[in-house]
Image (cartoon, rainbow, N blue to C red; front, side, top):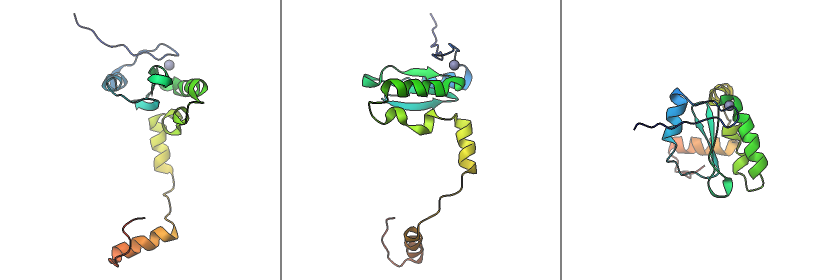
Amino acid sequence: MPTRLVFRCEFCRREATGDAERSLVAQLQDLRAGEYSDADDWLVWHGRGIWGPTRYACAEHRIALRDEIRKHYGTLGWHPHARVLGDVPPVVRQQMAEQAPKRRLTARQRRLMRARQAGAGGPSFI
Ligand SMILES: [Zn+2]
């Protein structure tokens, strides 16, 4: 008898389809704990242990899931407060990264870089 997994957003009960569904299935054997991850445009909270169950939210409810996790587990460490994945959808994050100004090197980093390029035998760390 064929079976299939059904992933639903815990806020609107919408089913994951297409790339999101494939990504969620691929993450099933992931043993992360207390960590967010993306599954296409869905957000997954990998709970386990003190972090509670694994929870899923569609693109529209990513922020609601993040807020819920922070409300319930926010006093248990930094994990629920991780900004990177919970705040914005991956597409928006990619656009922000493309528009962000490049980080400037410090004077010390530039000096070390020049020394390394010149082969002056400077330290090999920054
Ligand atoms: Zn939803």
